[in-house]
Length: 391
Ligand SMILES: *Cc1c(COP(=O)(O)O)cnc(C)c1O
Image (cartoon, rainbow, N blue to C red; front, side, top):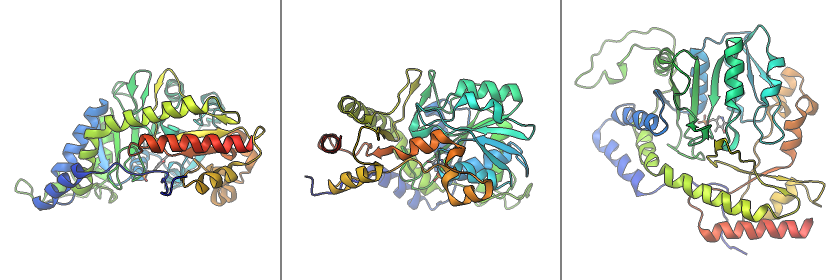
């Protein structure tokens, strides 16, 4: 057995990040400035996005996007219960209603066939989440949105770099008229990190402009450089905005991360393939869905236990891995099972039966570029051993 604990996740940080950060510290400009602009440009270029607005979290990105779409009190926004807190709380910020639609049994993503019947005259937007890095069915979602005149805000916190039908998530593919935005997270555990951070990308310029203005107190364009030689002390407040801007220190980390993001993605893909090859043969285990129309970012490797074939449940499975010094996690506790949503919307386990069922048998195991070949083999051996002992 390994003496050293293998964490569930670790950021891929090296000297490249330190060099970038030092440049910022030496420059005397620590908050949003040249590094942020460069990070936005290089991020947009990496996925072929038209406009990119950096912010200090994906939660902020989702909030600003809904604000730019004009969401108001009493509006309804369709999303999935199978996600992290952020995806739905941002809807509540407006005193709007998150309307949950159950997931597909195959891939943990919102079931597009169930969206139509959840639409009412108060529906304003659809907020799909690309869970684990496997894209939701965007063709269906955008078709429905277009049909009913709804905005789309994609929660792409897991989806850098994922592809759907040949295009990167966030790539400009919709023409200029669609009201949409795609929100990425650079939280410490995500596939590209700035410690904390996020990005809004869109092909809709008015949406990008609104998000940028509202990310910095709703003050007029260019105010961020009011202390530079080209800047002026004068500014105007155009709306009561927020304080969501990304710092140059964070952007510096992001620039270093961007340069190695392809190598990091390749390594995760390699690990996923090794896991798939090993686990597909084991009874009582289902490997994650991968689709031929998509490219998986492999932010998460989401295994499913066939509880009928095993003598242990998910909790005991995580304990068995912990005993072998392997960290694991569960993605996600569906929102409708949390006290707040249960209480306010009267939800029960049966409200979204697929999400409830899949949650009980999901376990995420380590997948990150810092893992060595020995780490990967150790996880494979350990999972196989647990299955052999308990099936
Ligand atoms: C991490 C995460 C977010 C929030 O990202 P932050 O950058 O931490 O605000 C939103 N949605 C999902 C699905 C996430 O996993």
